[in-house]
Length: 93
Length: 101
Image 1 (tube, rainbow over the protein chains, first blue to last red):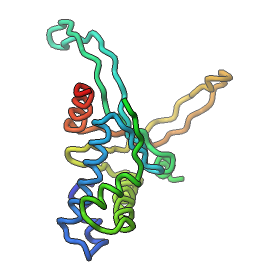
Image 2 (cartoon, chains in turn cyan, yellow):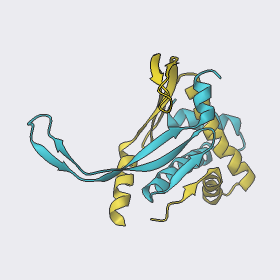
Image 3 (cartoon, rainbow over the protein chains, first blue to last red):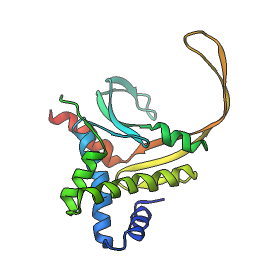
Image 4 (cartoon, each protein chain N blue to C red):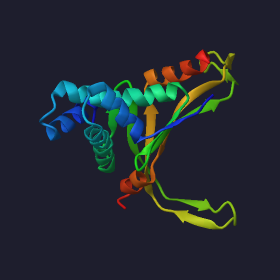
């Protein structure tokens, strides 16, 4: 399923809303999650999962092509942990 | 860093502000987004949201695990797990957020 299919499904269920409206609603949900993570906040959606930011320490990396050592700076990366309900659903519980 | 946790309520509020539907209807639409994504994933489908990320279902085979407290061996049955791969946009936004502080 891709973004446009998700929008279509929700539009079909809500005939009183225009496609444009549904698009804005769906985009707002995803944008809001990205903005929260960019601020370093967590987003916890019970039953679905939780988005958070993890810190990665600086390390000495290696250019796989040349074998040269390069300093990789510490950074923050997005992380998703699946919620219990969804995890159980994936396994047919 | 003042770390905050957002919930469905915050997403509902954002939709409410953005589109001007009632809070109740905004809440239902947020729930609907999560529900459709969950349904697709439960049926084994990959959910690919451009400029956000990709959720995919991966099968894990059975293996022998260990209770870290007692050291007992316990069989772990084959199962399906969800993996999320953030988009470049999300990775960049999260990485950039740090530098601004």
